[in-house]
Length: 308
Image (cartoon, rainbow, N blue to C red; front, side):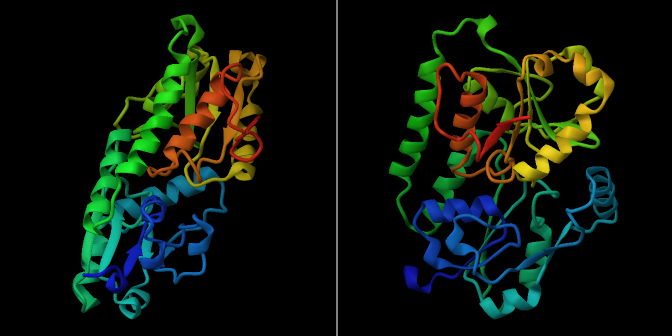
């Protein structure tokens, strides 16, 4: 199949970014409602829609997500009529998280029922950074493009960060809590603890490669992290600031070491930390800037992160 015959529908933002990085933007014919980067894909037909509103308070969103998952419904719906019109040759989705995108069974069901082209389904399942590299390699292999230079460049940026923090002693590596949801309180996991450690921090509460876990408020207070970073799933800087400020109104917040030393940060989790694609390296550099401003200045402050 020549590239001109390839018609790709991407149902997750990270896959769209991987395709773009590999030079395949022109082959994308449809996207999910959450795909927003690179900007040139925004005018493509949208193939999914959410079953709930993300404008509601975090607690409401969490409750509705649980209700949908318990009733065996995906949080997102596939617009089957759009898919049918697009007649894709390939569909990219994920099997990593039912809350993050259309589930793999839902895609398989939709394809079996109506897409006459029998598109190839490529499912990504990243839990660690090396899985993201493997996903990039897998997608490159499927479409017969070269990923060697791209991966070398991404890995080189990781190595630069590691080299710059090599001389730091253990007590110069701050203990870091990354918050992925505020109501209920949840810590960021999967690739996030790994990124924190690579950026010269000590990740608290989460295990690399494992799903996010609920965090008791009392545990956060008792552990008293050096740094607290908010990166709620799917939220930009403005929304993240609102979510974080609700927590700071609690009386115990004032006693936290991170608060007293001005080391509470908000990030654009939607663009960076929540997306297991090429911009995880940007996420690493953002963390390095926050954790070690005396060593790193990549220029992300103000757009990707701010002090709360």
